[in-house]
Length: 71
Image (cartoon, rainbow, N blue to C red; front, side, top):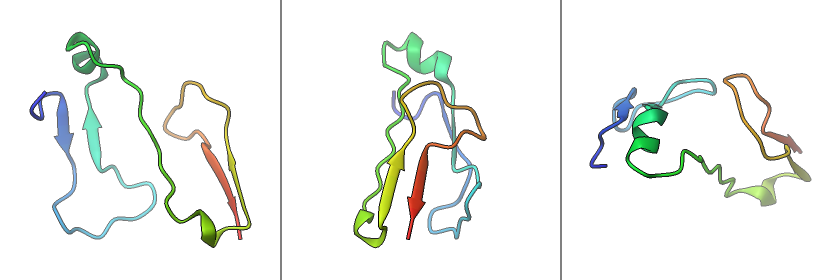
């Protein structure tokens, strides 16, 4: 899509915090281009946690809990 349908909300190298909007995606534009509107979340440092629990697959809203990490 060459960036079409996506709006970058932070500068390269910017310090970000939990809850910051990093990018906005136009899901309709993505779907109209024939792509799935699925978003992957990858946790790369699971070894730092005693427990990692993922929520059941499904639709997520802005305040949805998707993982529970316990140290």
